[in-house]
Length: 162
Image (tube, rainbow, N blue to C red):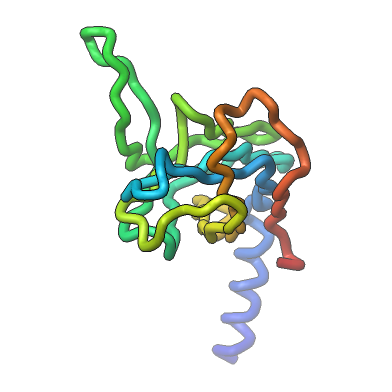
C-alpha cells in the first residue's frame, strides 16, 4: 500500500514540474594571459531553446583550485572591476547568455597546470532547472575576442541522451 502511494505521488509530482530548459553551449574557448599565469578564463555562448527560463548558478572545474562566475562592473569612478557573481546569471526561455571578454565569464583561479594551445579544460555548468552540463572547452591562447564567433564549434547539448 505504501509503495503504491509513493509511486502515485511521484507520478503526480512529475506532472506538475516544469519542463527543463534545453541547454546548448557553443563557441566555447578558454585562455590565460600567459603560460605562467595562475588564472585563466572561459568564454562561451549558452543557449536555452526551451520554453522555461533557467539560471546558471554555479561552475566547477578540476583544472583550477577555484572556479567562479564573474563579470565586469563599472564603479562610481568609471573604473571597470571584475566581480564574482554569487547569484549566477539568468538564462531566459528561448534566450542566451553571452560569456565573453570584458563581460560575463568563467574564472579559473589557481590553475593546476599551464593552459596550453589545443588542450581542453573540462567545465561543469550547474543550472537551477537543468542541473549539471559538462563541457570540454578547447584552450585557444591566440583568440582575442568573441568577434569571430564560429557557431557550432565545441557545441554540447544537455538532454536525456547525455
